[in-house]
Image (cartoon, helix red, strand yellow):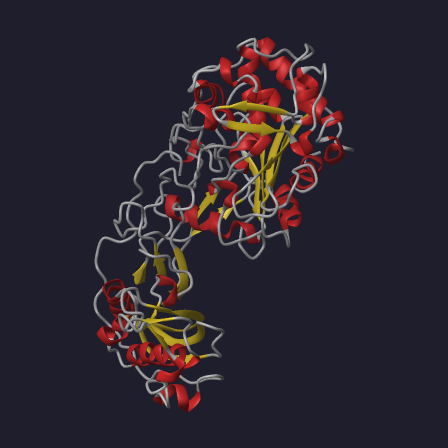
Amino acid sequence: MGSRRAAAGRRRTKPAVIGSVAAVVVAGAGFGAYAMYGGGADGDDSARTKSAAAGVKSGPLTAAEVTSTAQRFLTAWQKGDVAGAAAATDDAEAAKALLTGYAKDARIKDATFTAGTPAGEKVPFSVKATVAYEKASEPLAYDSALTVVRRAGDGEPRVDWHAAVVHPELRDGDALVTGKAGDPPVKALDRDGGEITAAKYPSLGTVLDGLRDKYGKKSGGTPGVELRVVRGGAEGDGKGSKEAKGSGADDVADKTLLELSKGTPGTLKTTLDPALQAAAEKQVDGKKGASVVLLRASTGEVLAVANGGHGFNTAFLGSLAPGSTMKVVTASMLLEKDLASVNEKHPCPKYFSYGGWKFQNDDKFEIKDGTFKASFARSCNTAFISQAPELEDDDLTRQAKEVFGLSMNNWSVGVSTFDGRVPVQSNAQMAASLIGQGGVRMNPLNMASVSATVKSGSFHQPYLVAPSVDGRALATASRTMSGGTLAALRELMSYTAAYGTAAEAMAGVSGDVGAKTGSAEVDGQEKPNGWFTAYRGDLAAAGVVQQGGHGGDTAGPIVAALLKAGG
């Protein structure tokens, strides 16, 4: 998590060697005897394209090459011939290490592999096996797939080696291990004392894994025996260290794949509100690219967190350009530096060039003789970028850190988090960062905290588990905005919620409200990521819909619905 303290390894003893791999079936629709016995696979030279000059095979793989390569790999694996299976891949050293651990560390034996119908170079296969540890054993079944490629150098067909070939939950560098879990299970409770389960709240599966990593040994439980994915960790310690290292996507918790014997769970209370969590789950249901976070602004308590795609906690660990929602932070800086004033005229031209880049507004609009309030409400890019010549390269970075507590890598939420990134940049990249592009990276937790800071008047580090549980210190910001700046920023966000780009989404959200929309262009995406951050009363929320388009149309309704649900 954000504190960056190294988490204790899950296990300190290496598992004993037990088990074997045998009785593997490489047969299925599309393989049959032809694939099993190579009927023509090696003799089909006419179907192969070779380089006449160098004798290097090239061109598309033939069906025979795909099936025979898959057959060679799976058949060797079935026999326990690790060296032979590894030699059928394009990275024999890495393959040998993981395939050795499949029997030795994961304790998987009596495995059978059944190949399905190839789809181009990809060959799906199913696995049935037994996992055994001391007197405990359980059946194991899962589906995986391999892809055949031409090996660099000689063009020979080989299995494209990645850990996910062995099990789809594995990432390169991870390991499969069966043994007594170093961390006992955790019975997580919501703020009202109800049990939190992944079955009840699908978005919280990764969060529950993270809570176990952090609090398993502290919550009073006893460990069971499990087959588990142990993450490799950024430092390659093999112990699955879970403290966030600032990369976002690398901070994924270990994952239990199979329980051979249950441990006794300890109890851990969280800040989640059951009604609001249910509402958040409903809002992202069926929206794979959607993520949202709801906070109590005055304390930083996380009341709800949900992700439409349940395999990765984008809401806490995402590292995405926040687009124009970052203008909340930038506006606070411009107001403090007297480079903008709410109701005074402020330039919003169609274009503004800086650092060799030509920036423009959405649909190339301009606001003639408009105020800063009008530019903020309509999300005018050039109104912010036009101030770049007046700024130092580190001004935005300092504002984000000193006032909003961002980009310091020290949040201690209770699970791993990415705490935002606002690097010092220069020239065009510095200008782009003013509108949430360039090198700026955020997630819904970060942007909900930004709105919470505006609403409460000061930064309160978000947390999912109260610091009193383990005596940890929460991150702080070094200063607060002046009263005048804070009042002006609230006026800007309130006006945007009522009359600006956030008005449609916030219609019907009553009370003391403020909001900001955002859209962030991403290379390779047809549509930008849609962002929305807002507050209502003592609630603050933010959400993103990846490849959603304009934030007011996509993330806005999700955030607004949660603010309404908060009463």
